[in-house]
Image (cartoon, rainbow, N blue to C red; front, side, top):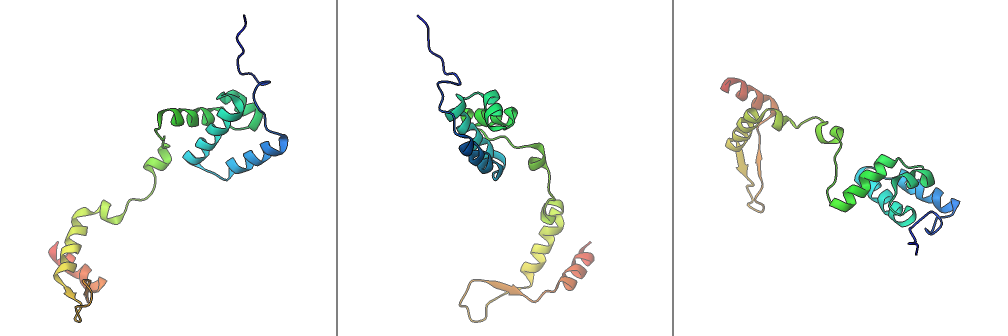
Length: 137
């Protein structure tokens, strides 16, 4: 009695034209979307084997393995660059000054004279706001 295991022969391999199409589709994706796509195609055509996906499609086996793990666990991995890069907003870098500026703007805010909207406006210019903030310290 021998058990039949999924091998290269028993899996439906795509034609060279289909492989080119799948590679093109994956190249137009990035991040978690790309890894999810590569994982799905690996499950469908390669029996969930990242090494085989590397041989058939030319995708990185580590990326495919990560996509399979994300699919299995439901957790998306973020790279260090995307998680920790980018410039923070001015308000996040200077929260005390941002709050003082908000309070200053609120003090000079006035209701729409026609009362048609709930929006307020201010005639406070940037130069006047900077001068007021400097006076506050």
